[in-house]
Every structure is written in C-alpha cells, then in structure tokens.
Image (cartoon, rainbow, N blue to C red; front, top):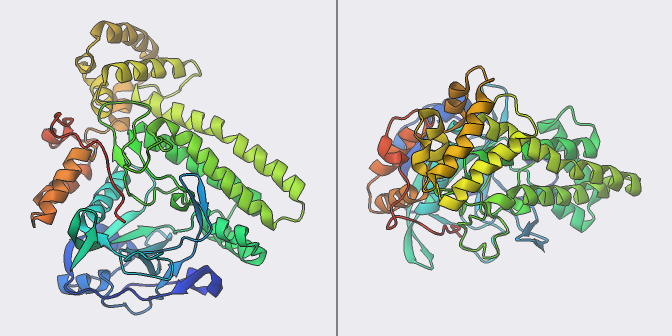
Length: 469
C-alpha cells in the first residue's frame, strides 16, 4: 500500500504540534473503506488486512510524519487555553487528483500530550456516526471532512455505559486548522507563531487573501455559506465550539450532531447543551461569535491595533447580512424560487412558523412541496392552504420551480433513529443497516428507499445525542 504523502504542516515550527505515533491496537478489523475517496487521494490498492493495520495505526506507512496538533478554544463560551488533538493523529497530507492538499487524520488513535487524562480512544458508535454523516454531508454538497476508513480495534473502551467496542475513523480534510489554532498563539502572545500560521493558512487555503484581515474576510464568507447550507437541510452541529470551527469552511467534528425530524427553531440534540447555545436557530449567531474570536486573535499580529480592530469589527459586523443572504438563497430554492427578493423572507418564515406550530417534518415537508401533497404534513391544513395560495402566485414567474425544488430538497437524510439503529446493529456484529444507509445517502435527492424517508414513530424518537469522549 502506498500513500503519496507531501507533508507541509510538519515543516512548521515544533511549537505547533507534538510528533506522536498512533498507539497500536490488539486486533484491528476493517469495518468500512471508501474506495472512491482513496482513488481521489492517489492511495494504491491494498488487501483488507493491510488496510486495517494502517488505518488502526499499527503500521505507519512510508512518508507519513505523525503528529498531534496544538490548539485552544472556547467550549460553550468558556475559554480553554490549551486543547489540542487529545485522541487524534495527523498521519500526513496528500495532494489529490484535483490538485487539492488534504490531511489524513486518525481519530481515536490513542493518547497524546493533549489528552487531558483521557484515554485517547473512540468507541464504535461515534466512529460509524461520523463516517456515515460526513459522507452524507458530502453527497448533499455541503463542505465537510470526509471518511476514508473505519476500523474496529478489538479492544474495549470504557464509558458511562460500561465496556464498548473500540474503533478508529480516518477522516480527510482540506486541513484541520481551526479558530482555536489561532487562539492558542494569540493567547500566549506568540506573535511570530501567529504570523507563521496566518501566512501558512493564506498560502494553503486563500491565496488571494490580503494579509490577516483578508484571511478573516475569506473565512467569514466561507462560514456564512456553510451555516446556511446546514440550516437548509435541518442539520444541527451540536458543538460549535471554536476548536470545532475549521477555517476552510468545512463541517468538522461530528459529535452530538443530528438532523431534525419535526421542525423547531429551538431544537437541541446534544446532551451537554443544556442552555440551547447551539440550537438549530442559534447557529448563525454562534458562527458570528466564533468569527469574532478569530478576529480577536488575528489582530494581535498587526502593528496598528486601532486600525486593525476597526477593520476586523467591520468584517465581523457584515456577517449577519452575509448569513441572511445565503440563508435566503438556500431556502428560496427549497420553495422553487431562483431569484429571491427581500419580501421572500416573510413567505419562507411563514411556512417555517406553520411547520413549527404543527410539528411538521422538516425534510418531508419541503420534499412534498413539489409533489402536491405538502398539506398532508400539516394538522392545520387551512392555514397551509392560505400560505400555498401566496406561494403559488409567487412562483409563477419562475422558469422551472419543480426542478429547482427537487435539487434543493433531499428525499433522504441520516435520521437520528436510523443512525442509532445502525449503531446497535453494528455493535452486535451486523453491518447491513450501515451499508443500507450508506447506499441510500449516496444519492440523497433520489427516492430509492422510501422506508428511510419516514420520520420516527414515538417509540423510535432519539431525543439526545452524545459526544464520543
């Protein structure tokens, strides 16, 4: 097996990371391998046993330069001055067939100096959840880390539930640079490291950006688009801490995430988000807050602090308008409008308010708009009919609203109850539900498996999701 490594982060100064090999595991077994992604990365074919050994961390392939990255972060609004990869190892980077540099990252690969007394491991449930949902997000066209492999370790992992089967996921990203990567050096006053990091981030991701403020402007734009895309499919990240906010504008760290069934702006799934900080409808506010933390870090390296603060403030204060514009564009498409007007915000919000009042299913309601049976999603059908009259009048001027809606509204999403059922089956040794979901989610806009479209019954509802640590 050959991986064409071309490592750049490992050439940064030692203070950015700690070199660290993965900790070998007892009996690695390949659970899933993403052949299409492997080909994109230029990884040569290998047999199942070799894949298991490499992606469990038992074998370090030639050219790898394993390390654990350093970063800080605000977690639920509270600043932690040092976090870092506590259970993950960056094997190295490759340049894929499209010319894009990508990280190859083992998650659950054992303790590192940043583990904070943790075991550095992951259990099978969160590993398969991240694998499945990250690939589902990719198929939906939403920027995301991707999953290359999932490996069972053959070792038990102890959590509150007791002994659970251990596993490791290999994720691929344009990089793992986070807001928290900038925060750690700003907090320490390590201006030289902060400048080095900024130059590296610009060269790698935003080569047209003009200095630190140009980088801030580019990251804000990418994050605004990302959050609007999340919301357009009913996705709730669950832990939008600054250490989980990638400067690439990719979705990263699929912990207690979930897709909504019944719509509600205040929907929360994360078991640790007791105040609703990361609720569905609050995600735009949080991403602006996160970008303010990035701005605070970036200005530390500039000589004229007053001018830098003024420019950074202007950039961050522009974000709500960026978010609203991106949100309007995405949600207008969902109701068949290709050229939205400002007053379409009211039309969209009127529908969302009806959905929230009636507990209508988010994905199925929007999907059914182009099948003429959307009123069946509502208890108050008269109210829907009144809204529909205004909607039908508005969309008459659109060239092909049905085709637009078909492309903007997925037929199948990774519903929480299906994900939990899949995990239970996998723990028992049955990977068939995982494979079924993966197949359906690979073509989310095609109605290939109708049973996966239905929302959960009352008995199937999963009200909370949990972090894997």
